[in-house]
Every structure is written in C-alpha cells, then in structure tokens.
Image 1 (cartoon, rainbow, N blue to C red):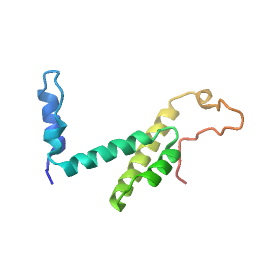
Image 2 (cartoon, helix red, strand yellow):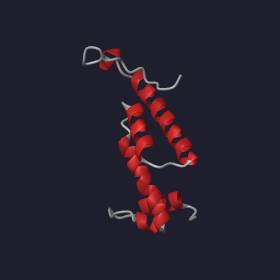
Image 3 (cartoon, helix red, strand yellow):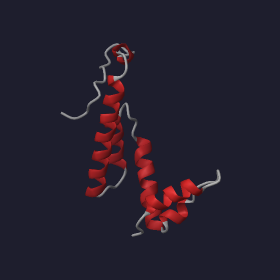
Image 4 (spheres, helix red, strand yellow):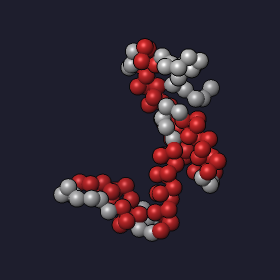
Amino acid sequence: MMKGMIKEFLKQLNERDDGDISLDNILANDRNKAVYEKWIQVFSLINPMNILSGLSVVSNSIKMAQRDEIILLAYTKFMEQNIAKFMADMPKESFQPKDKGSVNYDGTMFN
C-alpha cells in the first residue's frame, strides 16, 4: 500500500497553478481507486439530515468489511457531532417540522 497519499494530495494542492489534482497518481493502483470510488458512493448515499435512511441503503446495497463498517460508524458519529454543533447555533424555530405528524430532529441518532 502506498504511504503518504494525503501528503501527496497536499503537495499537489499547494503546487498547482489552478490545474486539476491528479488522483490517478496519488491512488496509484486499481485497488486503491476502487476503494476510493466505493467511499464516494457511500458518502453520496448519506444525507446528513437523514443519516439513518442512508445507512440503511448503504447496508443493503454495498458490500462492506467489518473495518469499513467501523469507519462508517465513526463518520456517522462525526456527522452527528457537527449537526449538533450547527443546531446549537441556530434558533429553535428553524427546526420546526413542516409537515403535520413530523418529528423534530434532535441532532442525535445514538442513545
């Protein structure tokens, strides 16, 4: 496995002259590219305001190893914490349900 992909990404970012960054060079091989594409797909399926639904879709449609699931749970917790911070700074009226029978989102999906 290639080490220093983030460092290489940062190097290209700092050295670029408004050109594109070449992820092909950074990812280096087809396996890394497949993992990268898989995570792009996973993140695309998860809406920060409806994480549980996205997790359900991901768990039913994408094959994941146990390590992948741990990473996804960590990312889910990260999103939850950031949503909670965002909500703490917003007026409570902003989070009133628009539809009758809807439940206000309280910023957490964990007990």
